[in-house]
Length: 59
Image (tube, rainbow, N blue to C red; front, side, top):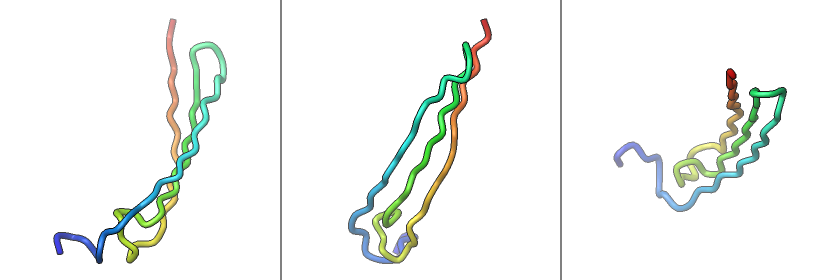
C-alpha cells in the first residue's frame, strides 16, 4: 500500500500565527497548526504542532 494506512480521502489544516515586534530589529512569530486527518487518512490521529520563528537584524 506504499506506506498508507487506508483509503486517502481528505485532510484539513487549521493554522494561526501572529508576529510580535519585541524591539527595533527583533520580531517573534509564534505559529500553531492543527491537522485533521493527516495525509487524508482516517486511521491516523489528529495532530497539533506549535512552533515559532524569530528574526534579529543587526544595524
